[in-house]
Image 1: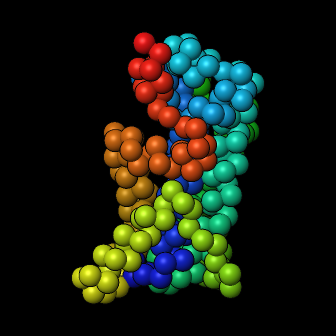
Image 2: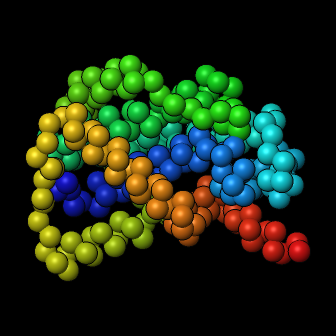
Length: 230
C-alpha cells in the first residue's frame, strides 16, 4: 500500500498478530474438536488445566474463560498500538484498513458479551453492526495521527519488519497504492485478504507458534507435548 517505514511495517504486523489472536480466541472449540490447540499452554497450566487432557474433552470452564480473556486483552493492546500506523498509509486506503481493525476487534467484544464462550458457539458480527463500524472507520480514519515515539516491533515480528525492509531495498520497490476500487470493495478486499492469510497460517503452525511464544515463552504445540508424554 505504499508504506515502507519500519515503524509502519511494525504496526501492520502487530495488526496481523492481533487479528490472529482474535481468530484463535473465537475458534477455541472448533479447533479443539479438530485436535488443534493454539491457546498458550503456560496460561492454561496457571489455571490448573492440563492442555493434553483438556483437548481430549474440551469444555468451557472458568479457567478456559480466563485464558480466552487474557488472549483478547493482548489482542486489544495490539489493536490500540497498531492503530497509529493507519496514519502512515495513503489516504485512499486508511478507512478500509481501519474498518478491518474495528470489525476484528468487535469479535472480541462479542465474545466478552457472551461470557467468553467460544467452545459451544462461534462469534459472528451481524451485518448491521459491520455497517456501523464501516461508517465509524470512514469518519475516524482521517483523524488518526502518527506517534511521536513509536513503539519498537514485537520480538516475534521483528524478523518480518526487517525482511520487508531488505526486500524493498534490494528491489527498489516503489509505492503501488491501493487497488482502484470503491470504499466498500476495498473493505471487502482487505477482509478477504486477511481471512485467506489466517487460513494459510492455520494450515502451517510455525508462524503461529512464533506469535504465541511471544506471549508465553513456555508455549509448545500440544502435539509436541503429547509426543513427549507417550
